[in-house]
Length: 144
Image (tube, rainbow, N blue to C red):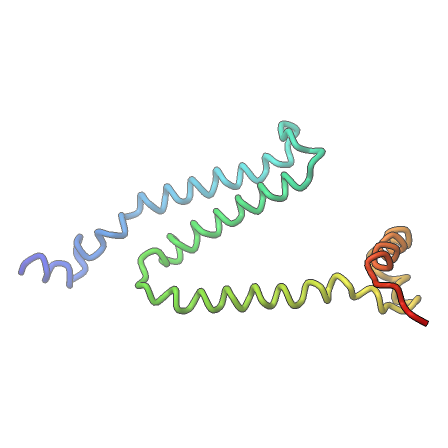
């Protein structure tokens, strides 16, 4: 009976599963190490400077790990009830559907640019002509 009353008053048993402040210090130190790993990709010691996709993949993994740590510990999602999945899974599915729907539109938006708009676009004329050749190569032949 004493333990139940003590836990209801916010005593040591009420926060026993949270682990105290030491856990937050460890998570902070892990975030510092992961930030150092991010900067490592730009140092001269990074062995894959000639393969940017390796660096991007590494950076994405580090970023996702840091986001997971922040969400789980600093936003206390680790200690929430199982209803959190009811909220996050549908939102994740919708975000993936939006990405799949919008990325092709963004990638092909230059097809309909006017010459004036193309002149002020972010890509150089050489890059644009290469892109146009690639787009034409992917299109099926037109019948007249």
